[in-house]
Length: 127
Image (tube, rainbow, N blue to C red; front, side, top):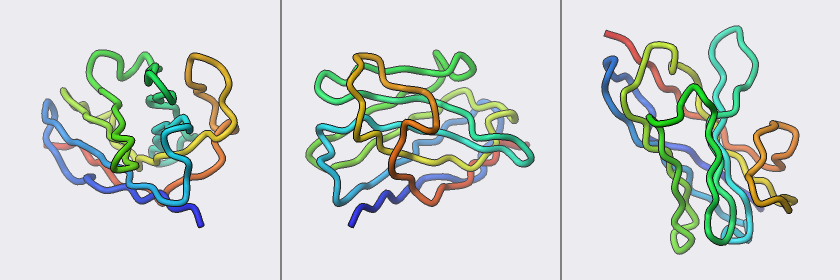
């Protein structure tokens, strides 16, 4: 049984930082591409970042490039999202997801490419 469990969300002031974690089980984790998406109230799911298998090629949305860092620990089967210089517009529920069928070098950014999803963790950026 595949499980993805996010943690690390919370309330933070603008300019602050948070580190999200996504612990997984039931995956061939080191062979899977992992991604983070977010959904703000009243909006569609938005791609945030993804990291490929092997050498871990990364892909970021323009809105978070230079502020967020995605990483993975293939021993702990966990993917992380370090979020710095947070802005109110980063407020959303953040979801991690696993792409089991990726065959391109650059991790995919489309929601439909991902096969398994976590339940999400709320991030609120507000003063």
